[in-house]
Image 1: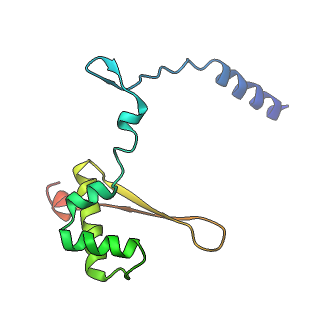
Image 2: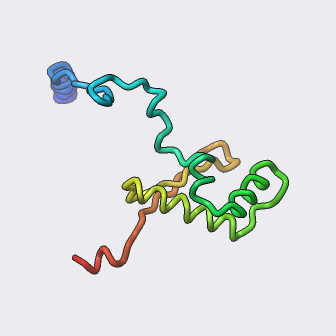
Image 3: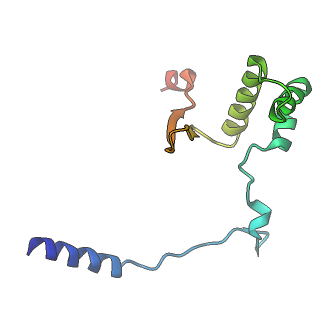
Length: 121
């Protein structure tokens, strides 16, 4: 009987929840189309070209097109550019999501840690 009561209580809680209010993005009081802000938090090639030195970006494009292996200096430059870009946008944590060849997925969660920040506390 207790299990049945728990189900009824749960259903009652679900049904009695208040309706959610959703506010859509607006700019200057007007609604904004999704296409105007979709992907704005993606570090794409355009943002990468602006953030990386030209030789590093050229090396990255060669690697991406399969013409060259990614060297350590270019990989470090890309990682640094992504970290600075993300932190400038307020990121404090990140996750590396990858798909190993086992048919499953995996994630690695990390945080941007500043030792100076903790010294101020």
